[in-house]
Image (cartoon, rainbow, N blue to C red; front, top):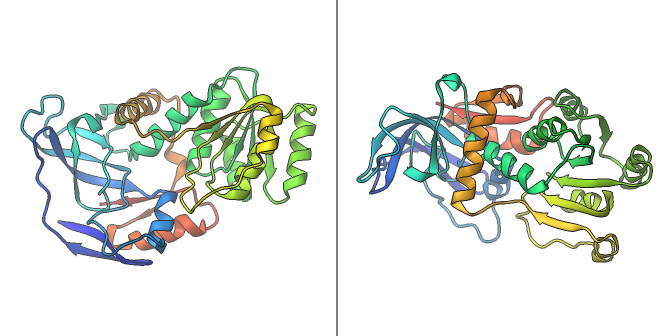
Length: 317
């Protein structure tokens, strides 16, 4: 099969590798596509602890496709089932996953892309955020994750304040239900804008969905007394400093919303399948850029550079 291999910093090679075979309790999926995650960018560029070459198909963890082989003891999934996959080598034509790490997609989603991992992640972050009707929720960072969370929070009856660098992202947030939008360019002006919108009370919930130091600093400032700061951005480039005096003074709860329990991840994925199939969320407008496997490097670079109108890239086979 064809698979992308990271051979060095910013060097991705598509090559022929042996097609994997499913073991006991596993299934093999002939992939139709895989989403590109912002968390791919820093490993792609190389980190101090990186070693090369990487695994075949590595970095790809947002795959979907059709089961074409099942291992011994698998009874919950059959060959021919179209599924979303929680697996980590999906920048390739095939990937292998545990049978309890896939969710069968209903017929209503036939022919539609379904990068299940980030959609499931959004559902779990929303659950952890404990958002209720009448609350004011600031979302810092309006990419794919922020847009889905905007829809979920606004549909729950919250007033969403969307904060992002790009005008196109703020327009997207408005389309997904945000009541207010603020350009993310000046730290103190943003705080004053949020105070004005909330009558000085600030926000009951703030979701940081960027994964960088400044957005985390800003998010902490926007939480009101007794509120919750939900860290949804993936912070993978080293330690962070936080204003502990501010957090302590306001008595806020800080929630790291990245789930690592496989059962919780699977539950989030099932929730995402149900939400999209029912029309509760429609991620289709967020799939803005599509690439072939041979162009996976360009897809990751677009995810890093965010050309105008960019939200999410998909690799499609």
